[in-house]
Image (tube, rainbow, N blue to C red):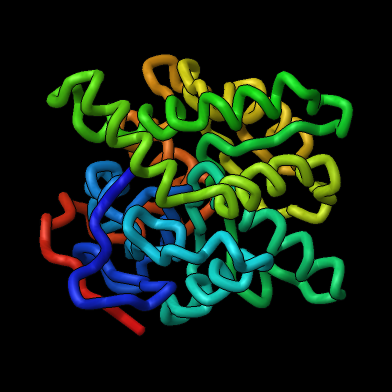
Length: 289
């Protein structure tokens, strides 16, 4: 989904606080997917009220982000920067699409190195939205490659359509999607698909923190069977497939998406009774380094 880069900033990673939160509220970091941006989360974040301290991340593969991000072989280092940039570390990370895969690889790699990733990053729970996952190498065939290569612009178009809510023509959506595809380039596409190809190698048993896996029933990018398979491979995961959503449930159904987050947070974080409630003021974003 294309979106604006923060004015006057070319930093590869940015972390911004959104709205107000009750004192001591758990910190939630939202991370967008390929060609996404931080504004896609705001409607869903408003549903949380003041019960969570919301942080929004911008990564190099954001819309109008770094042009050469796809030439960097280790995307996990940028997600690590975002995690460490949240003051006091995030209690929960909500990651969308390709970034879900980058996050899982980072946690897996940290664990393989003999370091507890959840202690290092302070993470108490994960929300993985529209993740790409296949459990077996033989689940990838030439038809899969052809679909994700030749129809890649159609997948990008879904994000444009979700954000515009039908306000622009189909022809314009296609033209915009093709421009986004050109910005991502072959190197960026290879990074995306290589992450997908490596999902059978993930040692999911190491991801022991509570997880919520959210998929969209109409998702043409990461079909809901991907979310189902990933939830089944994680030791402590809950699965929710939203029937009215595609690849961007936080935009398609922000109220329902936010409600699912609230329910999950209630079960894994501090009781809501310990925090004051109320709607989140729709304030401006403040940048933290």
